[in-house]
Image (cartoon, rainbow, N blue to C red; front, side):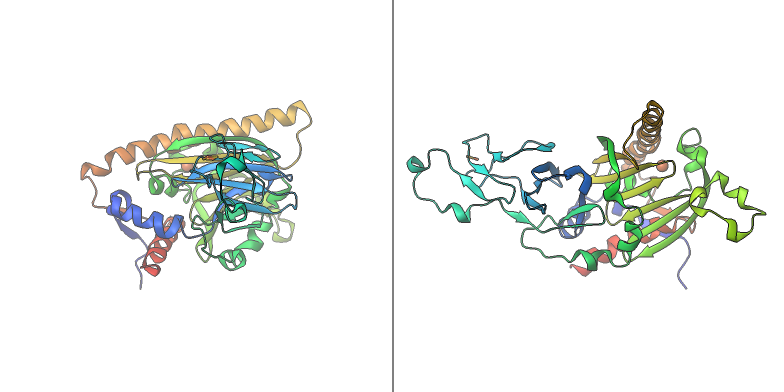
Length: 359
Ligand code: FES
Ligand SMILES: [Fe+2]
């Protein structure tokens, strides 16, 4: 019988060779939920970002199709689009003005006659495997790698689809520096710390150290009980409205979390490992279920946004940076995951599985 607690060698958190291996076999090979579909809502929109050191450009063409490319000009490698998102008719390389369209095709070369021989048709931006499903644009960071998004998500797609992410509205978005990938991500997978660390913020609304946990291959659905759950005591089960009393988290392997919260607010967190194992950048997207119209609705969205920002920066990551700083201290040769932290256990087993499978 497997022990119900799990011991994780500290090297999983601090060995740079292991980290490089995990980046190669997990983050560079598997489909990542890189952008929300609503971020590129219209034709000719784009998002440019660096992921695991790779410059990526995601576009939506006039045909409505989302595509992904390495954001490097085929002349001499300059990024053809600055980091950020927006709408543009074409991508003009700032170095020598080669021009690309949303399908990645090279459409114009400055002073082409003088430049000399070249085959424009073979000099489109290097494409990355890309698919759109369940409100996300999924990209694998290895050109030529293939993935089937239906296989990758399996039954989890039906779960994700219950949120209807593509129908939400983007309210605010920001990039937050955080501690190392695993220190950071562990905090997204358990409610054990909610009363203690988040007692004055998001923890006020949930029952600490209680969760329901389901796995879908590497992905996970986590359900927290809201404090109001106790009101169901004495209410006949047929009369329950469970949605009002839970908080639902969809945790997409390896680095995205969708926390659809009641009252029409949702937080999407994408944690991107940094160039070294000590750092991450978290893209936090705050969504609202409906287009905000009244002052009250805007105030409520601002309050939600400020609360999750505070909980993550001042509480989770503040703690995470301290843990990260002490990893080399020798205080621990292993970390422990309790039986009350099943999602953390599952996550780390999956990391080990994907690395082992690719050896
Ligand atoms: S590097 Fe882009 S045009 Fe020269
Ligand atoms: Fe937390």
